[in-house]
Image (cartoon, rainbow, N blue to C red; front, side, top):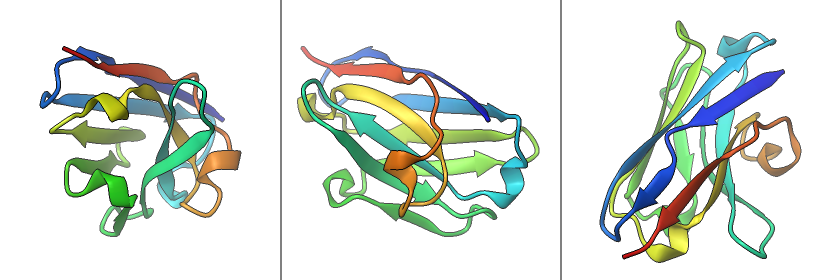
Length: 118
């Protein structure tokens, strides 16, 4: 299993970022996928999940309509569109191979840093 995240960076509060995750080494289209994050000094936190077909999504309460998870099974790619970013969203974001129930303890990539600061 190999997962490579990209798209992080420094953004001002209220700004947007689109994270991407390229998957290889497994049958992407039959695995639910998730995004998790880890803020400085804190543990892994589940952010969002999407089912195999991409038509069922789930979000943590703190997302509050600001993020959208999606996937492209033909490209073996997972995405997270993040709008209305807040300083408390600052974290390393990881894509994870699995649904919400295993997201914080399954295979994930090396992560991409998201920093929200003015």
